[in-house]
Length: 80
Image (tube, rainbow, N blue to C red):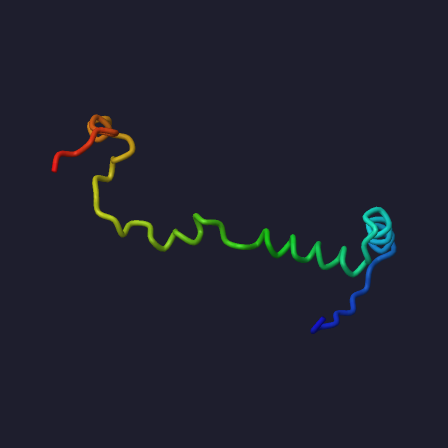
């Protein structure tokens, strides 16, 4: 491991960590690392967040998804 982190836990959290480590058979350190990984993974941007910068760069009718005339030819092959 590259970094060492020292933290203080209140008695209730320390008991919960002990219980979880005992229940899973993992070390307390591994339980804490897994919890941190899970927390950080949930903070990653969604696909929508990543693509938000691309919003509005494509030209086309503004009512493409709501106007039925645009849907009339959906699924038909175009002539070449």
